[in-house]
Image (cartoon, rainbow, N blue to C red; front, side, top):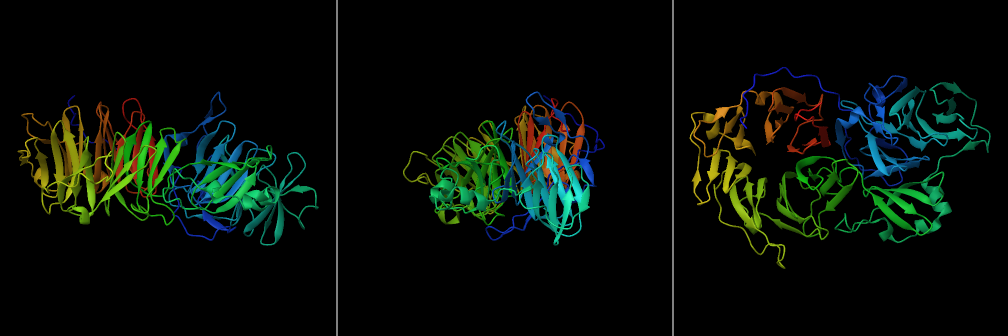
Length: 579
């Protein structure tokens, strides 16, 4: 299929990203006042509107809501849980990444409440599920928010002061009583507020469930084995995490939900003291690189968290998550990922501290190679995996690393001879048995004979820095700072510029991706999608997507983006375009 050279089209406005993640912030366990993010919380006017504005979505036959937020979804970390509350249907967990929402009826995660673009973090002083309906009340300075997940409606009621407590009248459909700066107010479910002289009469109200109530009712949970709240599969270092929040389901007294300071949410059958971890979101906030896996995507972090470091896996529907931490021998905490490639049961991660290989089977065995082991440089920019190892591009050259999963010593194969000595290698792409290499000195090909050569071209761009490569349908794309060229390896025609891919629209180019439907170019200022059937779409950062895009992966129905604000999933249309 020939790649069309299309005229530049004016970008259309994209739906506003309704989720933006908050930075992790170290806090004391059990702290009642904490910083957290909510979706468009401080930007919403008083009233009942869906987060991000517009319609809330349409209902499906199974009771789920089809939301416009599913077109563009940003997911950060929800591992550090600071508060938990449970209604008859939903579980709400307030974290440093926002408020995650779990549907107990359908056993699935809903879209979380997270920070909208440009808003500061809101200081949540309490969070409590409504005993009368499936909603949650959230206290923030100067307001009380009420969120109904089933309709995705967020209601904001202004009050004076900082709310710090809430109770609910026992009467059916009764109002909520909120204390703010020592003054009590009565809030209705439609948003009206009335000042009252004091709290409701003792015995006439319901106090929200807390961790203290969990421990009072089930004292064995307080002194239970640390293994109860430790995920041995996801945390290779077997680091214990402290339980800092909890609540009891109002309709099932043995159904206890506990939040930890780094290991996410747990569902506990209190009768038998059996805990089940419910993963949602990334292990750490930022994503440096992504790669497709079976039924989902792998994401490697940026080393921004002080709690955990490693790789996360998410299924395409964002329902099942897997976290793989570093080990004592291969620490990944604070390590910045720059590239990621997955082949069979191996995940290869390029980092600023060398090359890491993880077996993504249940053994999760790891190996690492650094400058001390023979790498040209600890800064690994690109990886091209093969059957028994991988070609590795570093800041000072190219090498082949041989790996054997059956050997007692995972690094027994060692590191091969260095090529392109002292030359930064930014991108690698196999086409048959030829390895194409994007370097500081231009585009280079490593032939099966071992010979290095450069393609002939009158365009000087192929002799300058090439930072991105992509391949599909016999067409190779090479991205430079001033343009993208298309080549047909082995063909006779001269490499030509693809004028529809204007690098200036994405800032500094970071990655290219392509398939039979579209070409995607990403950079520090956003992304550009060129439909191969015709049409160009630009999504700017931070207006349409949150921040710079560091990597991209194309799946059948989704485009996955790696950003410092988290993992971004965009729905693809049948022609390869985006909403």
